[in-house]
Image 1: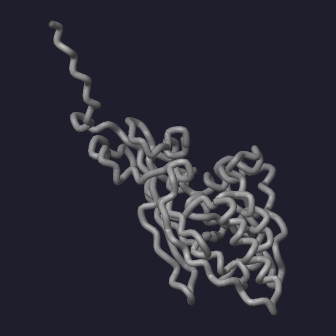
Image 2 (image 1 turned 45 degrees about the vertical axis):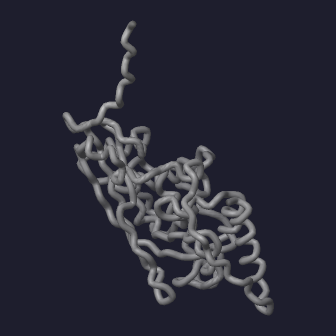
Image 3 (image 1 turned 90 degrees about the horizontal axis):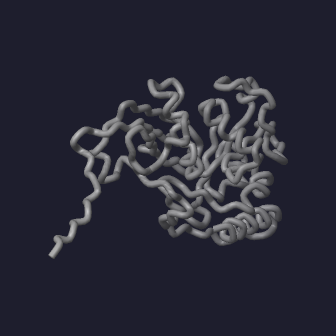
Length: 265
């Protein structure tokens, strides 16, 4: 996946840089399900084991975003991402594509990116994003946060995280930033998107309890709804995150079968 992303970006950027050169033939995607190694999450609400549990708490939130394809990297806003294209090239070229919704990789130029106002991203998610940057984890680059650019200007690098964000509080400078990410990036911190203001904020904020595997006291989450941008006239879309804290439903959990004992002769 790294090589495919690099080839696409290299072709797209180098070609767009020369106005007299023809655009490369558009590579239509051939969508495929990513492997468990690439995308280890599954829809917990579709699990056959879900009937053995009931939610002790549920939270659901809907977010507005703009959805772009790789074609849009050299188009001016609001239909494109040109102000951030050069910086995105540096960020994406050495990283695999995190996937689209539900672990699908659209491939080709059909790979999508979302853009949101950074101030519209839940504070707990912003803190998670900034923590990855400060600690230089493997998740750096999943979310690219940029300062908003004046007309005709281009970003050269991502925005630096605030040095002293107070835990749980928004930073005044967040309103001047945008964040770009592939849909698959949000699954790593999915409960945080629904946690704030819920009746189970503390439990949903504990990422260590988050898993696609169902368990008593565990946290599950999924993108239960998402729309698609009505191209070519619009890039607007929305998605809904649903998260639950589970409790075992008495008498409903199926215990694993025990091996029969051999009768002694």
